[in-house]
Length: 111
Length: 115
Image 1 (cartoon, rainbow over the protein chains, first blue to last red):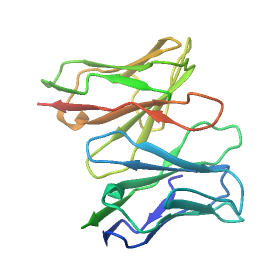
Image 2: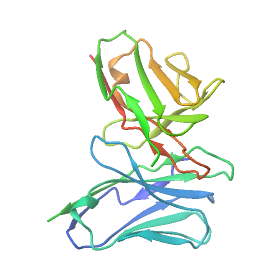
Image 3: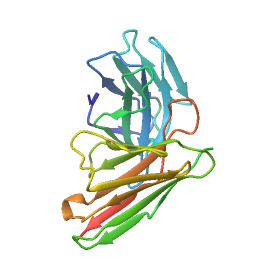
Image 4: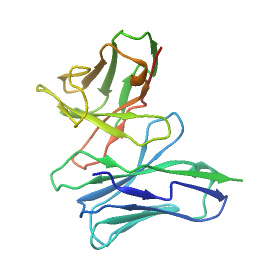
């Protein structure tokens, strides 16, 4: 079942913050976040496995709620390089290896 | 880091012809590879799971006879789009897991245009 991502698109000025949400109707084993630039393959950002977990790299971070049904990706003090489409990929099974991706959130960071 | 190589990057073909896309894991072995399809401005849709030495597992709605998958070695999986039609035009991306972690590394993708 495809997770629901919101918003579908967001336009930011450089330095502004944004939040992207990813929701599932069922508890998940893990949530993955990827970023895809136009015409390129998706690039892995991070994976969350535990309820209540938060992690980040530089100014991009993510959280996984306690019930493991929702994850949020936080873009802080956005940079031009953050532009792209962000996808969450969800894995509903403990031993599963198939990711189902959300519809994507297109992010455009303007100078 | 782990690299997944995909070839060709793009291909244009006539309707009715077959096209083969290769996916290679360059510095790791992949017993399983995943093939995704992405239409413009849409999400990545899993088509099939390629299993080394055995038959591929197709997602619901994906025609096995149209999208032939062969995983002949631990580093190579191929997707053949048979009798391609314009509606098959899409971005096809393969992926694999380099390690125990359930993290996918994607190939650069292959853009298929069927005239």
